[in-house]
Image (cartoon, rainbow, N blue to C red; front, side, top):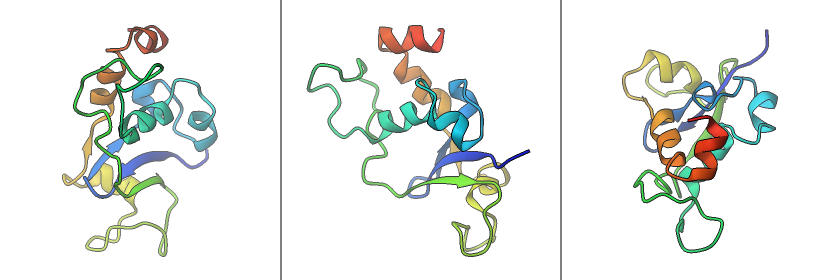
Length: 125
């Protein structure tokens, strides 16, 4: 089967699901995809978007909102000693599904990416 992953912002208690970007859940599936959750992560980490050519064409406030935060690419096989929730002991991957504290913002990021005509076409919207 293999290990599945989510991109988790521990600071803001938010996460991205690769499926929302049309990618597989395994690390090698989404890490090498040209239009994947990794693109969404780059959008969230961009701290000065809109100041130069080649930037994402979007005024959405979500762009750059993760800059400076603690981010983990969390696998569902994580165990003790890996990134786990201190109160529950759940790994971060499971915490995203089993805990109301984490919010999936995948489609908000896809929406911001679709403000840009290039990414709108790439994502098929």
